[in-house]
Length: 74
Image (cartoon, rainbow, N blue to C red):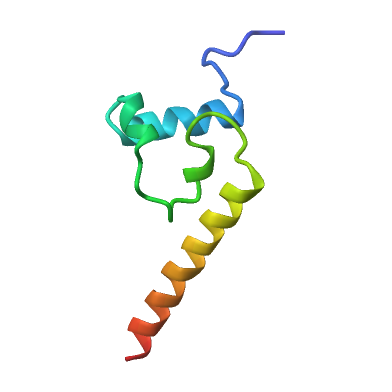
């Protein structure tokens, strides 16, 4: 069996790599990321978020979507 030519990242490491790419490779910027509506925000530090973090992100997403719907109805 052949070895893959590219490395395969585990999901959390792939999310972390994506966040680093989004923040121009600066770990301090990933930590300070203000985009709580991003679905990856809770996982940006390379670990599974706590239940309270998940609730906060879910609330932020719901708030964001409800604002969009209110704007579209006008």
